Amino acid sequence: DPDFAEAWAGLGDAYRHQVPYGGLPAFEMFPKAEEAINRALELNPDLAEAHAALGGLTRQRGGDTAKAKYHLERAIELNPSYSPAYNWLGLVYNGLTQYDKSIETFLKGQQVDPLSAVLAGNLAFAAGFAGRHDEMKERLERLVETHPESPFPYGGLSAYLVWVEGRFDEALRASLQAVLADPNDTEQRVYAAHQLRSLGDVEAGNRWMESSFALQPDNFEAHVFSTLWQIEDGRVDE
Image (cartoon, rainbow, N blue to C red; front, side, top):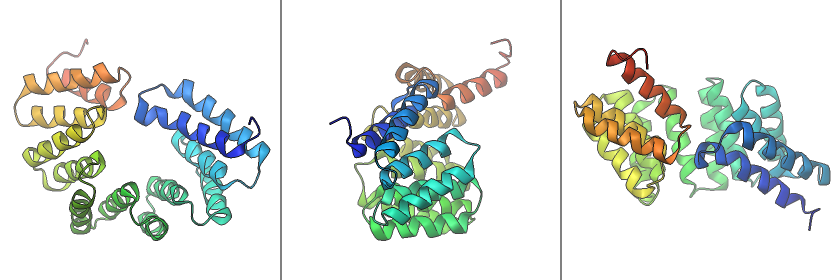
């Protein structure tokens, strides 16, 4: 059914999520996502999922915050039960450093979808960004208990342990748990590499970084950390 608007919206979401989660380049995926989402809106201008997808895509591309907010708020207006719209709107507020608004938005999303690990994790990070570090840690530890099969809470706890407490050894354990939960999680491989080097095991850190590049050659975090390491090691020409 080429006129099934929901399918076009879902396809647009699938394309845009291939960038952070599938390792595919934005310059290929974002235009495909935009085309699919626009087709969904042509077929059904009041489809909440399509507005949410367009808002999410606009946020990913950066720059036009007003457009991202408009489409995400429109999605919630059209379908208050569509939890991804709350999640992506909360991330928009994070980008604006309006953490009270992001926390409020994530909490509303949890009312709709109380079992969402993504909403719970982003809520924890928003609390941390707002300086509520004890709340951040408590929420992340609770998320590990409720979603032990997901890499997301372990990755969040790893970030907290480095960012707030400077405990690289504990952070490394959390990163390794994230990789065990999802061996294709290249971001956590990068963080494990960074933590190993910070603990003095340069060789192991380099191996973990190589494994991240092997899975996703254009991994942004991997390139950033590798460049910093080359500077630290005096390999500026590289």
